[in-house]
Length: 296
Image (cartoon, rainbow, N blue to C red):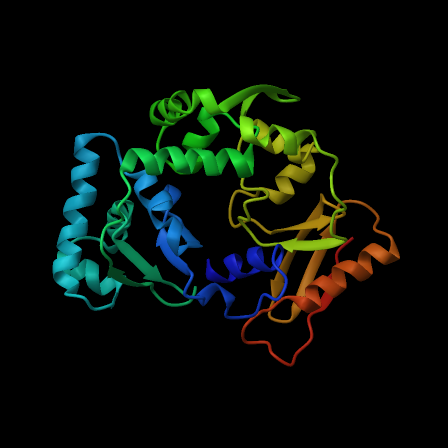
């Protein structure tokens, strides 16, 4: 969601404001797994064409939908429910068209997204797929083809083909949860001493830091009970990051933030969490203070 994207940016970039996610350098689209992504506009091809189906039937479905949508819109923007009705299809099917790189959206989280079309990217689907795999490895590595396929929503066979095509630029590694791969160019960063971590960060639901599956979750959060608290069957809570480690969860209702730590936090750590909560650039609460309620 846009607000989650805003908080993900805030956790990493100083000076983030309530409207940062609307900067012209960013766009929204239905990206990997048909989920809503906010990405750099220059990376549109990576996060759209990189997921375009390889099979003829899937590719034809995406391209035909995109062409029909473009004709119906005629250069205008339209709520995607209305666009679906105009095409005679369920509006959620429009997500398939996004893999062509010609469909953008604007969604604020409350109402239906508005949808419109743009010229197709110049990149080839193959190049976009390989760059998507590189981005995934750079952020989530060490990683496996299976994990990439699940994250990207492209399936095991196609993700394995991408890793095979990148083989010369990959290095195999051993992790506590099994064999995996990293980009060879990232090896020095893995071997370098860690830089000082921020005292506290409040990561939103679905943040890339913990958007993990299967054994990768065990690596980030060793305790099984804590994993169940973070990766719930329904909407995930936010992740509480203290000193560079996941140390609990949080949820917010208007100006009240409930924080559930997994260990006893020092007074300095609690103060850091409260300061981070107060700094969140949340639209709609200007002039009001976020109150932290500790659930421990």
